[in-house]
Image 1 (cartoon, rainbow, N blue to C red):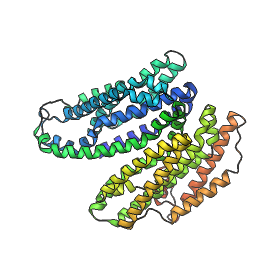
Image 2: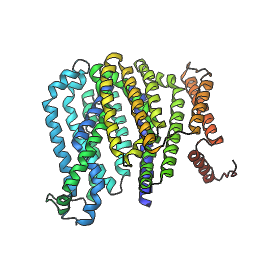
Image 3: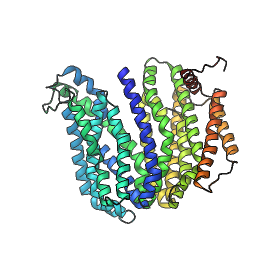
Image 4: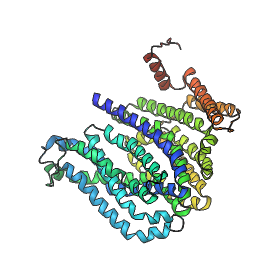
Length: 503
């Protein structure tokens, strides 16, 4: 448990540091060093190479986590084919993806040549980018299984961002041209694979044996059925996440993709607490369903909903009070991101307020509905993005996101309420929302001063800082969140300040 805790702490630290460096890259370096079209190309290449990687992966990492103990406990090092299988299957998947890329290259060029000619020009760079990313994910999974999650997390969350900073600076000072920048941009995961592979080579279990083992023969149908089911779910999730940038690149062009990237990164800040709570809650829910502890399930459902909504509103309103100042650091064309950020953030806040409905359903006997609702979300996102982006541009992607998430979460809310008589809201949800609205409109009366860089910074600090302090005070003073209040007390006790029981 000590190893897990230590690895978890390091991984979390690396994730947050990487997020901060990524924000610096997205909001400062990329927009001010690259043109909007060049910046959009990097986003489109990340999205498409990520999709190719997921198509090639065949959900092997999920199967690795589930079935690794069977190989570890029933086979010795020399007879285990576990490592070989986990690389051969994704490589076969990549060969299939490569054939598809070559066969459909003309269709791709027709779809993207009118508005995203740079993407067509660098089309074949997607092949090494996806291959290196695929190999990194496989090596990362092997590290995670061997309880060494901090190393791949460092290279994925921090190393990649620092590497990008260096490449951008090399391009800015004309040490490399744009062609060289894209080449290095696509090759990062090749360099990141080297330390992961060297680390794994020190593990005696990391051996390649091509002979099919008795465990594989015994479990082959379970392995196939499990990975196929997970694979469909992963592809649906990835398509849902990446559909907007792909349609924007095709219908409107890479310059619009760059503006969308800024909006999406801003919205992604709201999901940081969501990811942390999901990881913690799923094991608790699994155990609670097994013991038929409905009271615990309801408590977890309500608490996570409230905490995610509070933290999400805290982050969003702090950003929105200074949104004009933040966007002023970017070239003028990025101002179009403002209404997109607003709409997408409101949709994400509703998603956060609906709590851990995904984990609740996936660990229950109604997991099939969870799977079906994911398919429904995809079937909403694809046509809505296609229709609305072609008509409304960037705002079309925001409309599609809000409509899809609202329908998706509303159906899941109604299903959970009907089947389990559970819902995530409480009176503290209402009071938290009222507090945010009142504080926002009050603090927004304070005029923003954009005269100079210093006054702009002070204005951001005053408005956003005042909201952070005021809302945090309301949460803690009126104990709107039991968990956040407990965390507050623990932090004070750690630094030697003790509160009375009644406080």
